[in-house]
Amino acid sequence: MPGNFSPLSVKQTDYNQPMHPTSSQPLSKKRSRSGDPIVRSMDRFANVMKNAMEKSNDTLDKFCQVLAKSKMSENQVIANDLLKMQLPLSDQVRVMQKFMHKPEVAEIFKTQQSEEQKLQFVASLLCRVFDD
Image 1 (cartoon, one colour):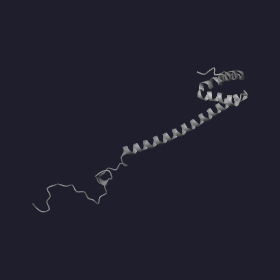
Image 2: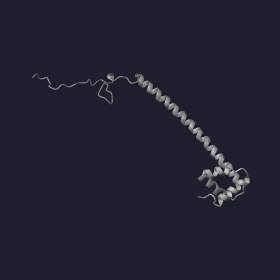
Image 3: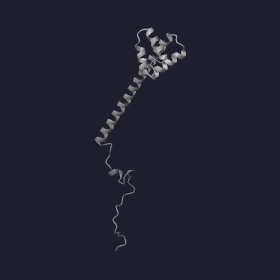
């Protein structure tokens, strides 16, 4: 056998050539992904979806702010109605707590047409007529 002959065939790589970090192939042999039309389309689609989601989040945030302000103003109207009845503060707080725990009761209160009906409704609440 000659001295330089090796029975094992070994694939040798040029160690000066840059390698892809996650593969054993040199970078020059990898197809460029940025030039792929499918990849470009997917990137554009991802950007469109990202922008749409950001706009949706902004819109939803504004909608929630409007709802919160609306709810605060509804509660303020109810608080003003209770104040007009000249109830003790402790009774006003108890009624508002009931309204907060059971919004359907607050809705019934808001449907009362006259001040007298509202006063009777609140008196019934304070006497626990509507308690389960």
